[in-house]
Image (cartoon, rainbow, N blue to C red; front, side):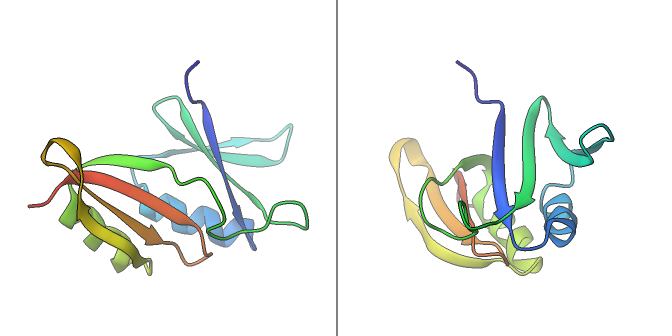
Amino acid sequence: MIPSALLIHVPDVQVGLVWYQQAFPEAEMIYLPEFDFTVLNLGGFSLEIVQADEKVGNGKMGTVLYWRVSSLNEAIAHFTSLGATVYRGPMCIENGLSMCQVLDPFGNLIGLRGTLS
């Protein structure tokens, strides 16, 4: 199996799309008119910004996807410049790497792993 998509639940999809496009500027925004849905494509992996509802709310309630970054300090600076806050870390982990979690403006966690520089 290969990961294909991550659904990120937000209270306002349009605001979420704008924020995540800025957070992941390398993502290609693809509009699917037959579904009236926009996907952020990262080399075949989809970030899908979807409406939070009574079944799945936004927030830091469970799984955290970690993104590999070349410089953890630069990634933290990038996300915090967009309004995210450091939630956990940075802390040292295996093989000379460190990890950190940042909290997006919608209450979701984004995991980052890389080297401190």
